[in-house]
Length: 111
Image (cartoon, rainbow, N blue to C red):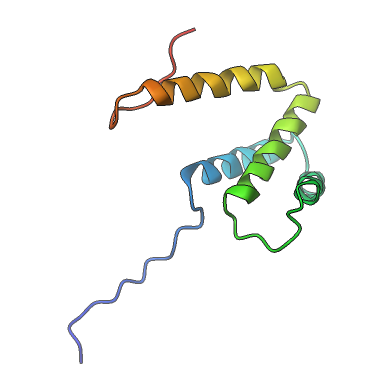
């Protein structure tokens, strides 16, 4: 009998932290009644098809970029997140990320 212990921890469900975050935001919005899951799934399917991503996906970046695009367009149509506001926020986060010294927390500049 071997004294060696085997590692049995499950593999991560999400490849990148932002994948988990956009998934969690979508689930929270669904649970808050902003849209029903059937509607979400239909919209997401349309986005995947529009991008030619109708093959079996592995949950990588292409999948979650399509997920984020679907969520952003849905929120824009509902008047919850105007595309210009989303772009402004993306740019602010990118600037903060690019100007933050390595190892330091990324923080947005006060507005």
